[in-house]
Image 1 (cartoon, helix red, strand yellow):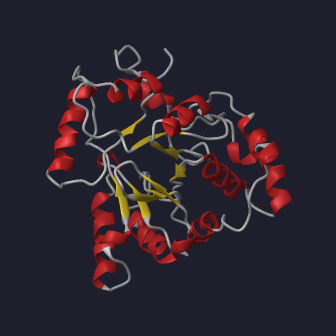
Image 2 (cartoon, one colour):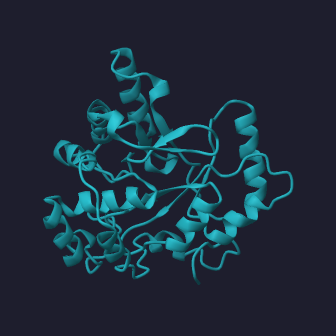
Length: 272
């Protein structure tokens, strides 16, 4: 099934599958490792993790096991990770951080470098920095029907920066989501469109994202849902359907609580 998943050619020259597996962890121990093994055997080739998820050891063990069993080669996988958790923001200019990351590419330690939760102005500042060697290959941001981020997406596409959307279903089930948060998967418009194509709301949202040109990394440890999320390449949303979903945008950010404590920082990426 891996050959069904379209890829984005990054400005670094590598291909990133447009559908990946998110591994943010409020899960039981070893649950992520099992999900990664199941997902890879279903055809997933893009795994998204981070130091703060505390899932990297499980993921590494699962990948190593599949490689040893001859079921996958490391070069077939696109694995994304991020820096260690920042409990206190620093005043380090992210341009200095970018220069340090460029050295990682020169040393062959990573193939592609990117950013996360950057706004248009911050991306533009990197693109205009003196002595830029490598443009950001990707910007990972929250992107859902309730947070379409059309301007940011179009700016990135225009400048050859790919986008990965996280929390595309509104992060249901996460412990930080308020009980009164809007339920994206139950939105009447999305449910209606799903019935039209005989697809679930999750499948409609994933297909909508891919047709808009960005990658998605939905999280699941349920084998049925993992397979269902992969089953989105046998239909195509009409232009009218796509516009109808974009029109649901209400600027709702499910992860705002993560960043509000830093809203007075000069590099805060969202509206204050």
